[in-house]
Length: 129
Image 1: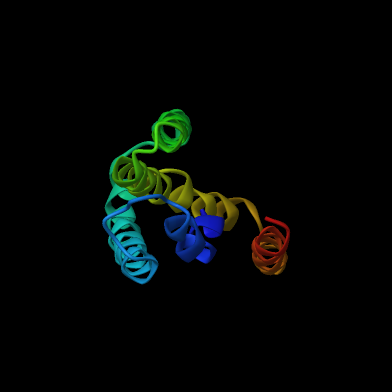
Image 2: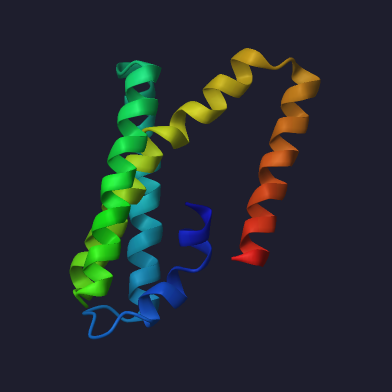
């Protein structure tokens, strides 16, 4: 997910005949991510964690499959749409329950370590992707 946010400009620039410029696409992805994150507060309270985890990962796999198919068929606008669908599913499933699990399982000192490790992994993925 973080790779999409960090490289959204490049992803959209590489899409042939898309209707958005890379700058506009980055704005759309940023606003969409904010809206999906805001809605995840509701989904974390409303749905069981098992449903969010299992159903979310299955749905994310389908969305990524559709992104790949759309890119192979050179349907840029539809690929961007499924990328946004993936972001919505991630923020409302795996994205919202990760920190819930961490705060319930770890003590305060370990939670700080988990947070630093999580941000380090994002940094590492940004460098090597």
